[in-house]
Image (cartoon, rainbow, N blue to C red; front, side, top):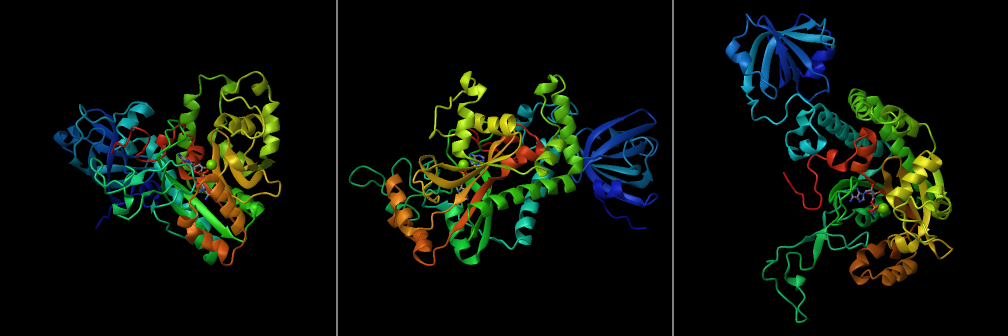
Length: 481
Ligand code: 4AD
Ligand code: MG
């Protein structure tokens, strides 16, 4: 009978006990005695290992010596009901072939508890641990769910450029893209670099956001979304910032701020529900790990259990609050009065720090919050100006543990107001003529937002550091691998 290779996931669910099977994977652990050995084998298809039972009379000792943690093996045998491995199925080996050895003296991922910091140093191998297997399977599932959600809701996936000549957020935190010789660039008379001689004939950078081009798409296709890498040269060494992160940016013509908030809430809840429905094995593993980590903490300091936390967000309406109300709450909070904020809240107009966002979510409202109506001075030029002349139709979605997970707004559709604002904040109007054309021809109200993909993953996985939810993190002074 011809056997065919199956994944560990398929084998663990198979009804075909007694069948000849083949599996290939990496050894997690091996234990046993002179008569019988047990190999825990994993191939990445699931958090669970399949146990391979090896009768030492059937397989050469020389071969079994090479079966060490991290080695790649090919097993042929019979699938049987398991009695002891904690799984429903195991394999009785007939043949074990070691296809790639892993010298136990040198292989860094040994079967013991490694710190996340250490695993970051060997990020090229950390996928082989349970924890990173779980994180990156969930990352995949969330990416898939994002496309699923938008496809089901009539959005088109728009590919916006990574190289641009504009600064969407106007914060000047961009990585320059150039082919000029850094040692000897062509200069203008005033001593500045002559970018007309650069590759694109002008100064270009990696995009901080696909929004501006996304708006162009929405103003004809109706509903679009982008999903791609974005780059920020901000020198923020925190557990929530990356220099290269992935962002999802839906943009919808004819949506106002209210519609935008509804979309953001529905979208986030869909993704969390998807994780609960499709990633339970991995979530349970991550939850157990978190609980173990926190077991020495006092009860009141422990965070909500991971799955409970996801269900909690799913089952509660997000609190919709204005910036002005939030400032009142923060200013009058005990925390503020007792000087417990690193950045004291002095009054209307200040930008909110992560500690303020988390106070609102975790201490005051005790659920996700959508803040609207920020002062125009602390938000980007493209946001719709409110009739009060002071605030804009911005919205930030704030989550427990994370702070800001989404930033978005209704866009200014009035040509004159937009141009005036651009001039006020020093955005070159003539270079942005293409953007302004949507306001010149057939302008309409429209809205959108950006969800930081890694911030979403921090929330769903319960991981504490954003460097641990992207395969190869880029942060200030770090572009390893
Ligand atoms: O609030 P931001 O800067 O908004 C924009 O870029 C808009 N153009 C989005 C839009 O309206 N289409 O960024 C959006 C989100 C943040 O809420 C946060 O989740 C994430 O992107 N983000 C980061 N994630 C990781 N590392 C960083 N350095 C991030 N900066 C922003
Ligand atoms: Mg923001």
